Image 1 (cartoon, rainbow, N blue to C red):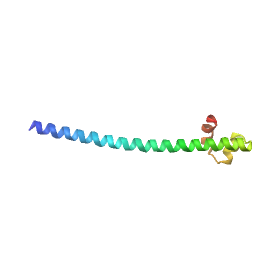
Image 2 (image 1 turned 30 degrees about the vertical axis):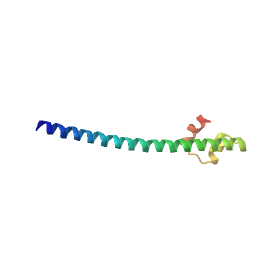
Image 3 (image 1 turned 90 degrees about the horizontal axis):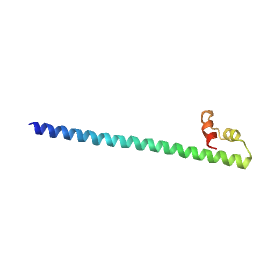
Image 4 (image 1 turned 180 degrees about the vertical axis):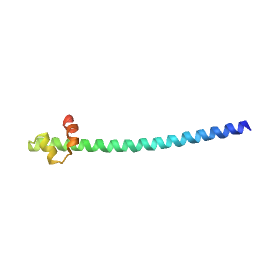
Length: 81
């Protein structure tokens, strides 16, 4: 009887671990996709800012105004120029 209980417990633990790993992997993949999308947006915006600065002789502030970049994001972009 003890062996049966031990085996049932071990199976339950194994199923719980498998489920936890699957949920963790799905969560990690979703987070990675979000971060990847944001990185792509940031790179595209930086490229646009630089292009406007070079092509139109605008300052970084003027370029960000033209692109309607939110005020809370401007310092992050300015530090990467």
